[in-house]
Image 1 (tube, rainbow, N blue to C red):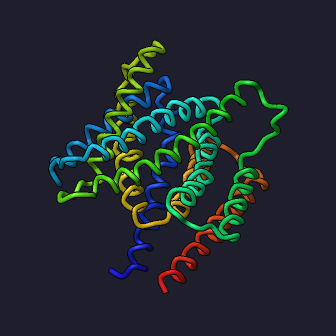
Image 2: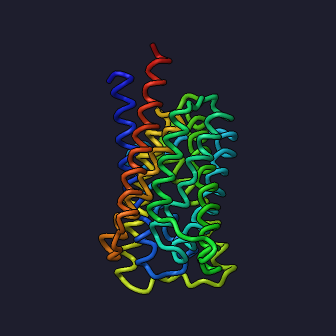
Amino acid sequence: MSPAQSRQAATLELLAGAALIGSNGLMVRLTGMPPTTVGFWRMLLSGVLLAALVQVRHGWQPLSRKAWWWIAVPVVAFTLDLWAWHRSILLVGPGLATLLANTQVFFMALAGVLLFGERLGLRFVAGVLLAFFGLWLLLGADWAGLPAQYRWGVWLGLGAGLAYAVYNVGIKRSQFEAAIGKARVPIEQVLCIAAFGSALCLGLIGGAEGEAFAPPSLQTWGLLLALAAVGHCLSWILISRSMVALPVALAGLLLLAQPIVAYLLDMLVLDLIPTPRQWAGLAVSLAGIFVAGMKLRQERAAQEA
């Protein structure tokens, strides 16, 4: 496979993973469980599934001390992300909460410049601004007229975006450190360790908060399993594998597919009726992603030439 084909495949994998994650907010809301508890079960079940996958496909490989330290970064970051994001879902809804969490694109672009030496052109910046202007049209509201709880949900969503960006960068660096040495460490092993670590942290937080951990019904168990297997394991395997082959800024931008999918699911499942302004916002967001993504691909091709 040529480098161009590899990047194209990685881009499609990342978009597929982002679309799957876009359904997570709706599943979290449908469980009807406390937010920290949902995060605990999501990460615990994900860890079990990933551990089985590692055992069957690759077997466990030793990790360096430096790799273990870097895995601690996504453990803490994703704990904070889920704690804040799940509360934001309950306060402002799945679509807007997912949009707010995807402010990670700004933080990831900054990380690409500061940590990985990537350069951002004006067209990329314009594409990001266009995408977020469209998302503001899609889900924006008058800040002064919002209830206090709603505003708190907005701030939690923004905090989740920062933690989300740290998680993405931490996973990428963890993969790099885990690949150093004679044995190849599969991404599933890195994600498995991070999942168990986040489950432990969320379990401790949930216990301190006094939340109930037992799922109330078989339907809830099914939603939790779907959230773990599809919304976390499959989606993050696709995203983590593709992020290795893509610039950090482009990966963050493509992940903007998440709030668009979340909003469409709000329309289909929660009977949200879009206004003409919201339809325009969806179109502008997609245009922004296209403009910035095309520019990055052109710059990468020019550098290789």
